[in-house]
Image 1: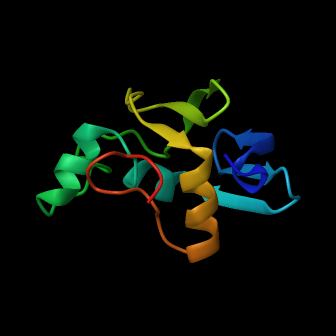
Image 2 (image 1 turned 45 degrees about the horizontal axis):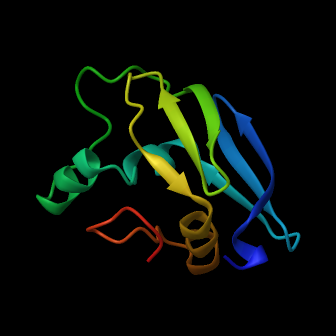
Length: 114
């Protein structure tokens, strides 16, 4: 994997955003709502592919917040949300491409970099 896709520093503001500083110094910020709506897990992708939105739902807690976040090996970030959802893993490469393109960069079939 190219160094530009490796995270050097990750900061999680549990009620606001996730900031990733990549090895080449590029800093990318992601709002919690945009991360949750674009969760790359199979269940959320399935909802989006059928024209729905995975978040918010009528029972979704407001405001959205991160309960916990942890590194998943050297390739991504796992987030547990305050709505109980915890299956999405955000690969560094996909987050970097999202930052560069200004739009989510997860492929519909794999959840990995697009």
